[in-house]
Amino acid sequence: MKFSSFLTGRRAGVGALAVALAVAGGCKQFLDVAPQGQLSEDAIKADPAAAQKLVDGVYNALYLGGFGPDISGLQYVILTDIASDDADKGSTPSDYTDALNIDNFTATPTNGNVNNSWNGFFQGIARANQALDKIPLSPADDAAKNRQLGEVRFLRGYFYFNLVRLFGGVPLLNGVPTAGDANNPALQTRASAADIYAFVASDLQFAVDNLPAKANAVVGRANKQSAEAMLAKVYLYQKNYQKAFDLTADVITAGGYALYPNYADIWRTVGNNNSESVFEVQTGVNAACNNSAVQIYAISQGPRQGGKGGWSDLGYGFNTPSLALSNAYEAGDVRKAGTIITITNQGTRLWDGFRIPSQDSVENSRYSYKAYHSRTQEPNCGNTDYLPKNIRVMRYAEVLLIHAEAALQIGNAGAALADLTAVRARAGLGPTAATLANIWQERRVELAMEHDRFFDLVRQESVTPGRIVPIFAAQGKTFVKGKHEVFPIPQPQIDLSGGVLTQNPGY
Image (cartoon, rainbow, N blue to C red):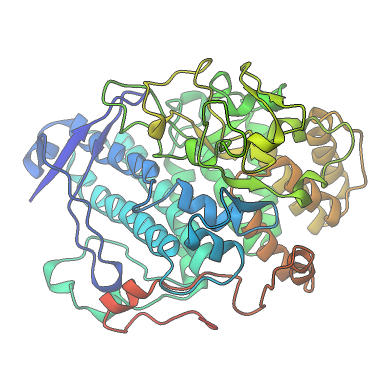
């Protein structure tokens, strides 16, 4: 068997393995890339470096975006930020009906966003399974192979964690399907959400046990602490607060992490892989200019010219911070200015000197600063569809807030207060009581527009029932309990499975 591979110019110097895969039934995925080189099993057996290309190919699945299969791009943003109370669709009112339906809780199983997100994550899982199947053939020593396996299982765990939060139970693929499996109902049937969570925990625990500590890891790759942090988050969702507390405590006591002093700088190039970075999608600038960044991630969320115009359009205008989010910040909280571009009647000058002339020169009055990438003060290669914007998946501030919430739930109010105080101090705020409501509020303003709010609301509803419906009702939206906690299973996937895949309730 041969695997097509191609190299990218990522900053870490890693390559990408693109494999043309057919995953059984409702998870059929195809990633067809013209071969630029062949990586055979013989090559993997002969060259220790060959297996690393398999690992790199799984990392590069994080780049999937645009309007096709999506892991980190606009369509994931739609299902996380725009679906929440923190953001609105934005752009022009009639633009992108699929996104508008997600925003308004009127999505159906034919919605393109849900299908492309499903496709993207299962492509990432297919790459991971291929890598896990072939890495053991490498002549590298066991420590090196276990590190590679650990990185891949971290990523597969992350992919499945997002799938279970988006859709509930999904097919569980723990290997490379054979040709004879094409119509195997077992590979097309949804596992329970509980089984998926157990699988995610198993993958992440393997990563914890086999990855090097941050101090000994390659910058930008998963390490022991990033695996512990992600596993702690998984346990927070399962209400296993003791394990969430213990794992985040390990990250905190291991050292090597600190809150970055300037909050606004975290999302600029100067903040890439900073002291607070636990895991982020790596990007870079290269000659090809189309394979080292998440397609249209930044420009799709940039300020959109409208009205009087007269300035250079900075984006499509999607994922605009809501008025509710803008009003959620306390006076003096520096995070508001670092999160929201607010366009005033007098105009707004951005951090890089670019000036948006007035409120009536844009389609929307608020945009995400965390997605903004400067055309003049940050690197790019001239292709605005591939602006090299690193995407922060997990930060140390979230580790502290997971630790705080878990601490409070197990009766350690002192530890919760210390964590909460540290996060607020960086924001320019004084201490507040360590209550569950305050910790959740801190999560909202600290992590706003970082693609987690919708998941948080669903999780919090399971802890404090009766919370979520009024939040959306205040925005004129109807959230139906028992339905809208997850998105519809894509109809194309049900069709591919011959009806073996079942639909979520209410859809």
